[in-house]
Structures are given as C-alpha cells and as structure tokens.
Image (cartoon, rainbow, N blue to C red; front, side, top):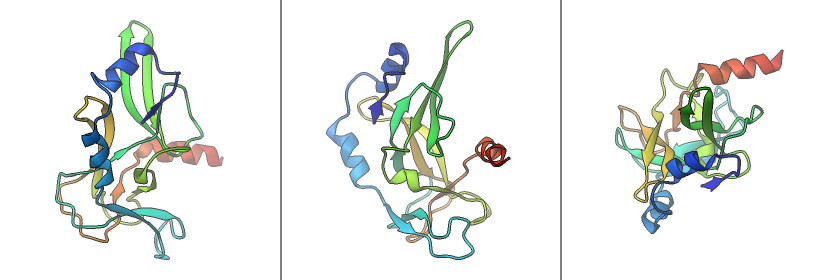
Length: 170
C-alpha cells in the first residue's frame, strides 16, 4: 500500500502499525484465490467490463484478498475505487477520514463488482484486518457460504455509493 502525504502523522502511525510489511504479508497477496476476467453474460449489469472470479473453491469466512491502493486523507469525490479505511476524532471538532483509492494503483480487488443485478445477496464482504506486521488493511472475505470455483466475487458497495452515482447523473 502507498501513503499520500495528506494523511496526518498520528493516523499514519495507527494505520502502518508497529513495523513495515513483512514477506508473509506479500506472500499472502501472491497466493490470492482470484482471477480477473471479462464479463460476457449479457444479463450482467457490467457486461463487457472486468470482474473478479474465484480461481478455486473459497471456504466461508475466509480472507480472499486485501484491497490495496493509495491511502489518503483528502477528498476524492470522483473516484469509483475509494473505500473508507479509518475514521477518528482525535479532539473536539477535528475529524480524520482515511480512505484507500485504487484508481491509479492497486491489485485485483479493484475489479470486485456490486452484487445488485447479479445475485440476490453478496457472497463477500469488506472487513478491516491487521497484517502480521501490524498494518491496517481493508480486506475482502467470503461471507457465510462457500464460493465455488468460477463464481464471481461480489460485495455490496452500499447505498451511499449508489446514491452518490445517481446524484452525479442529474
């Protein structure tokens, strides 16, 4: 993960943890059980675009992949690849919000699509975790059911994500 200079030092220290990334952190991203594929299903809302698919069976409640990109504390209203990572209020009237933006850099996780129009519910969720080195990450985990090889990994982007997109159209 890369870090924007817009992140206040105390937030950066909280996110980075006690040490730098370890080889184990890197290996965990290299053994990812996913593959990026073009969506050919004409009924899919993202037909012709890319999606993230299981390259092997993924058991329920399993870490699939970390969502990597640039950690930042500035507003990125035009980004479709920006997730909230950390929010804090270090003192009265002071708010810090750190996001991860995968617009210009990231990994396979940036190709995860929303479940709406594809399934009745998501088969994966976003969840915070700490790596072995202590770094705070936003990660993608399988939900309560096993994901079969070849299935698309789908999450809920959340109602606010869709509301923001609808407001931009008007």
